[in-house]
Image (tube, rainbow, N blue to C red; front, side, top):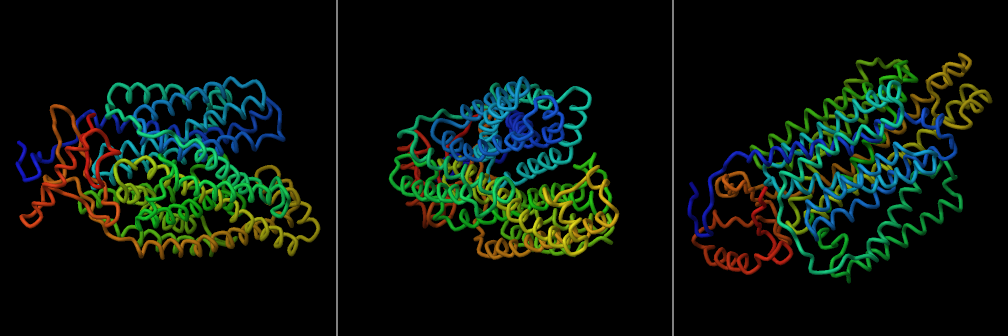
Length: 574
């Protein structure tokens, strides 16, 4: 039975309706699609080149996907805010599936690159859609445990992706590395279509096309700089300098456009929230160091510790399992206590410790020791991965849930691009120096084309060069991981300034669940300036006047999210 309060009827807390659980299952399948794709495709790359040719354009198979994903992420978030979450999410799934089917049917490398770009365009909306829909359906205090599940899905994709990709390529052919997305995607599409029912929105303004174009150009230029710098082109080359200039100019122009746009792609006012800005910084740094670690740890284990490259996903198992377990525990604790400020602090401390321990590895380090070091790093990541998204969403109004989710995702993506590039430069330079010191001209010749030698190419080297290369990789990972520890200190400093804004929405006074209609209310929007929550059910007699006034405003603005004041919410039927 509902309890009466001065703010109106409030129902006692009820279990999540079955329809919400079905939607969450569909979201987990969609998240798996988004995370699994590159992991599955990577083992198929040699076979793809052997079938289609075009070795010179191989890198574009990944780059086209990455560019389209990064550039479209903020646009998908805004479209969901303006026109409704369900429609934009279903559109993203359809585009992703169309790109997957076309990629599987590609007849040459140019077609594959173009179709991968289409696939990446849809993928940009998958991650954003999942997080934003969770933000719509689940109150902030309960959101942590579901986001912890999403971290688990990500870990499963990272572990199982290479195994599944290699098996599919060997037994079914490389085209099925793309076709495998279709049955999973169709299931997710059907479940979301049948069960998810969110209020339709009608935007008051027009899409900011100029802002979208400038942001797309700026992000694309920066991603190309980090992808091509030091590999395709020298860092000081004219191409890289031009890309940097284009990227900076586009982003500066984007900021000016956003100040005047009626419906900005990335509303700058969300950065006035201290917590949101801090989460953007922490998310960027987390992406920076995490993907750098995932790049160099397998290389170290294969080259120095003699691990097999066949089951490359299993090499990261200690880090990923630790990350998954801690993320789920942190989500549960957040749900039960409503507090989260300690998690970013503990997470960054563990991340610094983990990278420092990894930087101490040498040619004598055992697999057990390195596994323990990775587990420490994974625990730090687990405290940060979803808490950053949760706090970012909790720091904005409901009408900005999409852009908050897309911004958090974008900063992490950009961080990963810069991390792989910068840590890669440091690693490669250190490897080249040590090889020259230990093996002379033979070492320089062996690593002349690339600083990453694995498999048959490494085994074909003379023994003296193999020994030199093992020491060189050990030194290179030392430098890269030491940089990771130093960068993580900045994340710790940001975490210390996070303000504890209570997460509400799970108690009788914070959540109303109407079981017969399957209604889930979200009481998680923070007040814009003060970052405090409005909770009419807990209003005291001294604040009764303010509560009544807020209720009048809510009634007057019942037409849509964009018209209601900060902190108010509407029923989201499922």
